[in-house]
Structure formats: structure tokens, C-alpha cells
Length: 392
Image (cartoon, rainbow, N blue to C red; front, side):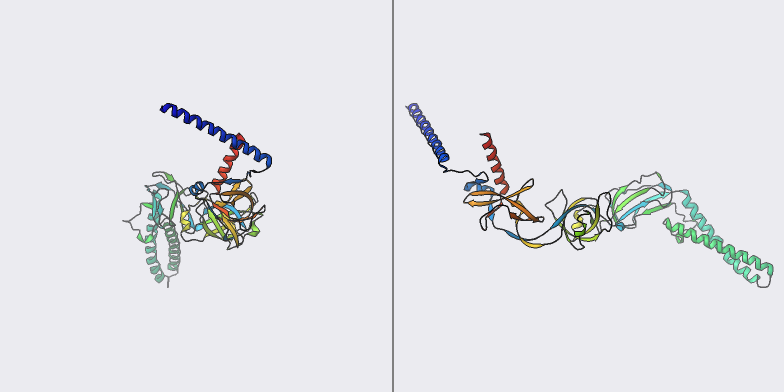
């Protein structure tokens, strides 16, 4: 009995379904012939459930300060005084060093030391000269008294005077050589000769490069360390020749790392180069960070993308999220009627890092309701619908 009831129900269902499809087909054919149904390929309809799920938002224009800008690329750099190359002041053998790349060092900090017998010989010569001067000073005074009445003694006095001047000059030269090597002459004695020369950091900063290896013999031409200071970092931009006359000191610059385009920062044009790179047809433009501590987010040598704002005016805009970019063509969606959204072409006139100003290419209703959130979902759904239509 149950089986008979089941098969009866199934047959009724199939017959009803077939009749429904037949009626729908007839209606569609009638509609086509009579012009009652028209399909707009640039329009899409959503259900209330879909609108709620994707969080679709519509609204009018925003207002933002926006204007003409020039895009440019560059790198984070440091001024000349923020970079130091450390060489050995004289030839010698490198002793132990524990300095590593990335390590922060302070001005005057010992980076490594050198050892060579010539350092000891230099100190020896200085002490010998100092002792010779002490003797000549006493001899000078003695001969000065004797030369008053004795002609022969006068000649001896002149010789002592000359020898004293020679030794004083030699001592001054040796003192300067020792100070260049970092040795204080007044600290030297026969019992306190300095065996090592200590190489110190000329600035505070981070170690960028290290070539110092313990035990290796080095000469004055070799760079042992490269140090870069974090202070006073700036951005060096390359501006094309055709745009350089538009750039003025004080103009606002929006910049970011291509790896994190969502994090934007503000700078200011500080210096404009006065010569053109003939090979690349560009001019260097020096940009300072405007926001306190923002320079700490960037490392020396990082690649940067920027927009130099040439002018700013208050305009009606929408957020970047509402724009559909398709090659050289740009679109937005507007609400044509309840739950219906139409894709409309636009022409972008200006933009900044977050807001876009544009013109309508075709006529739209007065004060249209623009899809401000969910435009990319609508576009993807429309594309899926087109693909299915082509498949049929």
C-alpha cells in the first residue's frame, strides 16, 4: 500500500513539474516575440540574503582634498654625514673583533684592534726625541751664557739652538702621527708602550658591512666596516625631465613600500636637484619625512613608491574600494532599482592614496546611489553570469 502511494505521488510530481516548465517556456517565447522582457547585460539582481551576506553598502559621494599628482619612485637614503667607511689608519694585523652586521655601535666604540711592531717603534722614536729635547734645552741655556763673551762658544750655541729646533719639530710630527693612530703621547712612557692600535667608530649607527677577519693583514686602502646612521634618513626620488618644472619645495608627498601599499606615510619636498642625469633623463629630488618616527619604518636602501601632490582642492569623491579597474577602463555600480545594480563606466580625473574623483561617461540619474562596498562581488558575479550565458 505504501509503495502504491509513493509511486502515485512521484508521477504527479513529475507531471506537474513538466507542465510548469512548459508554461515557463511558452511565456518566455511569448515575451521574446512581444518585447515584454529585456535583459541588460550590465545589470545584476541580488536577493536580500545575498545583499546581507556580502555586506553591500550604497550611498552618495564623499568629500576629500584631492588634486593633480605625479607618481615617482626612489629609495630611502642617508645624508653624507650619516654614513661612514672605516679603514685601518696604518698597515697591521687584525686582532679579535666581535662586531656583526646589523649591530648598533656608538661613536667612539672600539670596533677592532691592529698589531704591528712599527707602532712600538713609533712610540720609541717619540720618547727618544722627547729625551733629546730635554738634554738640548739644558745645553741651550748653558751655551747661551758662555757665548756672551766667547766667539767660539757663540758658534756652539747656534748649533745647539738649531739642533733643539729640529728635535722640537720632529717631536711635534711624532705627536701628530700618534694621535692619528689613536695614541695619546702624554700617556706614553718607557714602561707603558701601547702594543695595539684601537679602531673606533666615527659615528653612532648600524653596521652595514664587515670585512674585518681576525689575524688578517690589512692595509690603509681596505674598508673594514661600513656604518649607517638611522638619524636624518630621507627619500631620494628620480623625477623625469618632463615633470621636474612642476615640482616645488614644500609640496606634500605620499609614499609607501610596494610590499605594504596599505600603509601610507607623508613627506615633503626639501631639495630639488639642479642637474639632469643625461642617461636616464631624470633629476634627483630630496624628500624629508613629515611624520615623527615614520622614518623608523624604513631601512636604508628600501625601494619606495610616491605621489607628489601638485595641488589640492575639495572635490566629490568615492573610496578606491568602489572602483572597478579593468585595464584602461574604470567602472562603478549604481542602484537602478530595488536589489538591481548597474555597471556604469567612468573617467577618473584625479586621485590620492584613498579617494578617487571621476566624471560620468554616460547619463545617470541625479544623485545616484553608488555601491561603496561590495562592488568587486557584483562584478565577479556578473562575469560568472556572462560565462554561463556563453556556455549555453
